[in-house]
Image 1 (tube, rainbow, N blue to C red):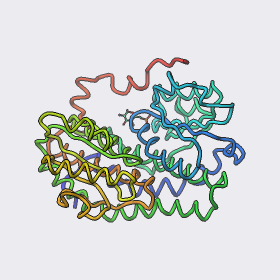
Image 2 (image 1 turned 90 degrees about the horizontal axis):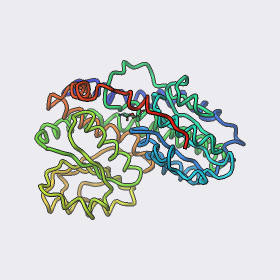
Image 3 (image 1 turned 120 degrees about the vertical axis):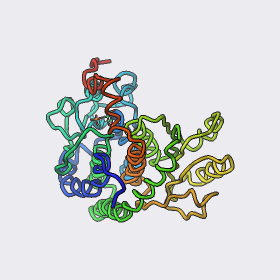
Image 4 (image 1 turned 90 degrees about the vertical axis):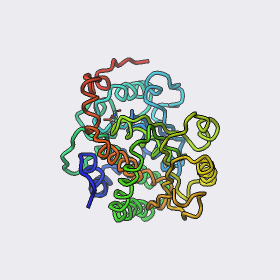
Length: 378
Ligand SMILES: N[C@@H]1[C@@H](O)[C@H](O)[C@@H](COP(=O)(O)O)O[C@@H]1O
């Protein structure tokens, strides 16, 4: 029995069902959005979006590198639309640009699609709205359809996981179609997604309770930091965003290496820190070193990992999480963890959902700043 209820909490709990639902429907779409010849023609894939959708691009980068063996780039959307050297698109038709926007309404994503198309790339929107401006700006659309859900204004949780699910499924299908592995292997990867979801679902109640308890004891903490690297860096990045959206508290994200170069110097080290580190992550030993420093300096921190607790300087700081078969798949369900903490902390602090009181009084323009931005072709 959950210790609180909120719209964000309802979203978190719904994630396993949603991922299964999308998976049950999207394979065919992934296999037919392009012909085999079109897919075989691509040398490069560029993925981008804004906010959580950029994070989704980063989350699947290593999956695409490993399964497709192509050059994968994940520039920020403003770079792609205003700065990116278009010579990188190469010959006409050689680069696939995937534009991720769940709503399909974000101007910068439309602009990036238009620029990529104008410079010879083939574009595909990954969106929930096939009538949206982003869909209209792209050559192809991968339609992401979660099950019916009473979606409210919350820190995006379902939208991010829905986009990741579609992207993983597209990468898996493409790898098979271009001949990198056979259908049995592709089915194996698809099963790995479902197995990860099942394992995570089984542990969800307990993790939810434990993170609620962490939120209670960390209620006075003034700011938060999220550290990781590789695909799990997406989880740190996403976690940072959820703190802003759920509680309005300052938070930041960094990779293990650069945190150790600069950030430890911060005066009054009073943060609440989260480390994401799967035992398959090649940066595992670096994370252990950082955890040792945190222990020595008496930081307040928690390590999300599937590794044995004894691998870390302070086993009491280790929060055991279920993991995926592949490192590249870990971000899919890891996203629930910072949502659980942020949702619980918002409840404990009595923050209005999605900081609505603060957003409505200080930022009355709402989504217009994202949707009505001037579109230019550079
Ligand atoms: N704060 C929101 C994010 O949570 C959202 O992910 C992003 C992109 O939205 P979309 O995926 O609809 O383009 O917009 C804003 O930045």
